[in-house]
Length: 295
Image 1 (cartoon, rainbow, N blue to C red):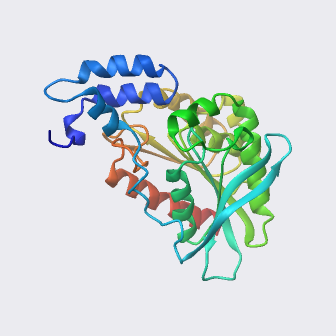
Image 2 (image 1 turned 90 degrees about the horizontal axis):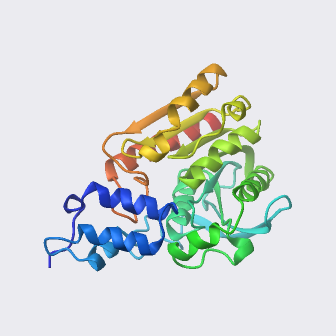
């Protein structure tokens, strides 16, 4: 059997995976529904393997990249989960203080993709911190299915406190110049929006396909926003018109991009939802935004 390609897969399979990945259906329902698309020599197991993350050979920045000083640290989150583990990364070749970026994971903990994004961010001239909100439950367990199950055991507002504490840790770090932004993906996109609500001194926020705050919360945002959306992401996009109206009503500085023909998770290069052109453009815009707003 020939290896599956993205163009071989019905869009409804991507929608089905999105529902599963965001806890709208359980694994049994996911497999049952997936079987409807196992036709023409395509098996359920091949579909499942194709749609699942591949962390083995997708890293863009090696863990031991000599251009970086990168390693795990622990910081206090007194209003959240207590002691939180995170990956702290910065360029190894500079002694000057750098702007900081908090990198917020999806709804499954600090997996290899998000660690890689933290290292990518550092290579662009920032000190980055990618926390693991699963730390109080033992940390990212090594696979996304178990990670999602663990993350459901934590209150999202408690996890928000963990990332707010990460902001303060980074802002006061000896290698940081005090200017700190945030980028987050999916659940992390919601966290990024809410950090903009909660932190008047946040330098910039870049939510990728993230849930939106209420109109009342939006009125509290002071940070400039760069909002990244996927055209085919009906679930998240449904809240965008009201959010945009609230941003306009409150004179919040924002720029929004909707990437045509791509799915939720298009930046994640470990799954077939990845779109290289959209991901590269969105990341280029993200780094340029941080360099402009964080100095």
